[in-house]
Image: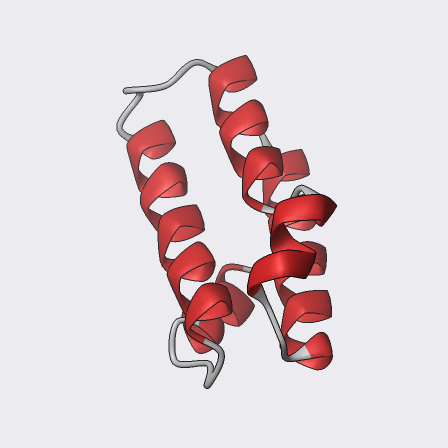
Length: 77
């Protein structure tokens, strides 16, 4: 799933690309033990809250990939 997030950083939809980049940064901070597990999960899930995501993202396929990847990565811990 990290690979999908890396791919999405190049998405044509800027909101998807930005959120994918943020997800990777959050995962990196967690791996450096700068975040607790609960902080990590909450930050990751905040990235894909539907109301804001629906407003900002226009590419449905990329949005779906982002949500799937973020949920999967958030459960890895």
